Length: 383
Image 1 (cartoon, one colour):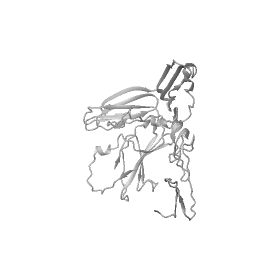
Image 2 (cartoon, rainbow, N blue to C red):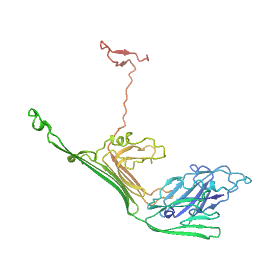
Image 3 (spheres, rainbow, N blue to C red):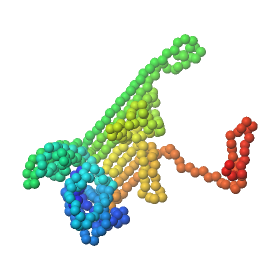
Image 4 (cartoon, helix red, strand yellow):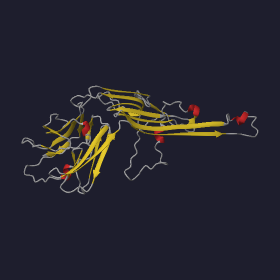
């Protein structure tokens, strides 16, 4: 039996292993076998004689701080030893390029490098950054790797069985600071005047000042600092007079989320697999989120998702401030040694319960008054 692993952030992985379980992973925490492996390299395993029935396996990755990433357990079907089973590369590479992570605790930052090509000669293999890359039936290949910030040398090799062929090298630099931002401003100046018999209502027809100025400021920013600190921010004052432009900046407006879903301006169905992602959900006038690894500070709309205890769960969607802190070091199970979750928000809804005591006597039913304003009593039975 051969396992062929795949991951695209090998620069952040220190070691990896295949864990095989004799039964359900959730019920049996002791693996039947632990197979160390290298990125992109296949590893063989001989099924023991005592193994019967179906098994499960998963891929586990470790970084230098013992943080763990783990895939979803996959079912392993066992056949008899005389079963005729041909090796099929399409089946071996069925999971290539797909994300099957169930636990993601390894922080990843930097940039993405994509390498693709076609017309690969028959009988040759492709290696990118020293890792093998599958080639499809059309002799094409594509791979994507995540690399940390800094200078890198990307090597692409096309080799035959004797390790002879072509090699290409490209030098590139991934900056540790990169920002995208956009801003807009709008200013409206208007005048008003009145004539005629305005003396009865005061000067200028009772309209007050004949000069009005309205403005609006909005902007969006997203980027990274120091290579591993990510910042996402957005602000929109809305249109109002200049004197009231920054008033009530922290207040929330539930209609803000509805304003972003405007059927007159956008199509609800695209038909081309397009998706719309709101990276700054906020019921207020601004949103900001600062992330580093698994820790973050946020102001805007968020979900608490505090589910560590069975009888004290807090899972709500709120508007306010949120703090998440996770230590880089972790336990043997991949969980951080220390974590803090905190938030501050105004309650939009409060749990409420009404109790009505039954007296055992007749019930007074208040009905809509008729022409004579009568009301009716019932004896508690259904009509």
